[in-house]
Amino acid sequence: MSVPTHHIIPEPPAFENPPYPPDIFAGRTVLVSGGGSGMGLAMAKAFAQGGAKVAVMGRNLDRAQAGAAEIAALGASVHAISADVRDPAAISAAFDAAEAVLGPVTLLANNAGANFPVLAENISVNAWNAVTRIAIDGTFLCSTEMVRRCIARGEGGAIVNNSAQYIWTGFPGDAHSAAAKTAQATMTKAMAREWKALGIRVNAIAAGFFPHASSTNGDAPDAIAPLQNMIPAGRTGRIREFGWMSAMTCTPLIGGMTGQVIVQDGGESLRRSLMMPDFIPPRERSGGPWGWQ
Amino acid sequence: MDWLKGKTVHLAGTHPAIEAALKAAGATHSPMEEANIFVHLAPAPRHVPAHEQGHEEWRKTLDAGLDQRFLQANDFARHCRDRGQGGVVLFVGAPEQSAGVDQAAAAGALGNLTKTLGVEWARDGIRVNSILTHRNDETVGTLAAYLVSDYAAYVTGAVMGVDEND
Image (cartoon, rainbow over all chains, first blue to last red):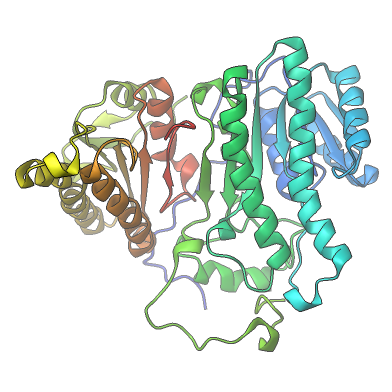
């Protein structure tokens, strides 16, 4: 089944037409955690389209380097770094390395995350710690690292956090990420308040589903087709529009914006009916805890 | 930035920063019947404690902040459907808790109305969003212009402020 042809599906402009001038971030450096692939790479490319120098941080150096090569192809200065966002010393070293090559980091995209469908009772302590600490501790550690450096230099800055559309509803079958992504959104507001006077802005995107090569089943057209039908907007998100919205929050074009969590999900999180299909506990779903695997 | 080149907008209410930003982005004004974009702007009401507020004053806030928005958005969406075109609705007003109980009621209702209409009209290609803020500066204008542009094609049912005090 496909979306009926009489339905109207709005689309964003083409990748070659970013919403801001090519020099909006000129002379500035952004650090993107988990920037080598997926949503982080989309953020990194969006910053590059605005003229930013891009530090691509990832746990896997090969992947970070591959992403950096794609960003460099857009004409941006790049530097790939391997670091674990849960390790304060590694983050500090990564910022040192990024700044040595690209100059002071005044822009940050907290994107690093891990996620997979699993029943709460089957989440090991290790898995719980990994998913929650990459998002929560990682966002805390990377943000504070950048802000301390900005304070020392007397510079402002901007941070964007990659949160998720399920932060207001919970996400059965995804307890670790449901908790972690909501913390990122509440941290966004708290950090925005604390750092307002320092000229550092903090916003978040509560993202819906933006398929990419490394998302769960994200590169399988057969798996994505039913999602197009399920989402009110009639399609999944285009990864470029997520990247642009993220980078846009960091531009001086909307330099007064801070503490906002913008949902960008095509209405996915809002869809409901009075009568819905029978409730099946995540444990009993044939397609796995998300009903889709 | 020509985010709104070729688009027509109908505004209800006045907001110099938003009007300037829409114009700068390339939008032109048109009657509601022909507009691609409908922006409804409601002024922040004066704060009057609930027990000192007469029913007439109460109704005035609810009419401007909620009823007129719903009725006019419905008209706009009907025109879009009649033309077989998508469209964008943007409601702009003060935050929920920025004035009295009248504003709390109007803005709270508007927020969930935004989420509801965003889904009801999604497959008509009509997006519905709200900005609830105490600010009225250039950032609000530019944010509004972005939200009604195709760059925000995947944003619907979103209710946002502008800064940490919203």
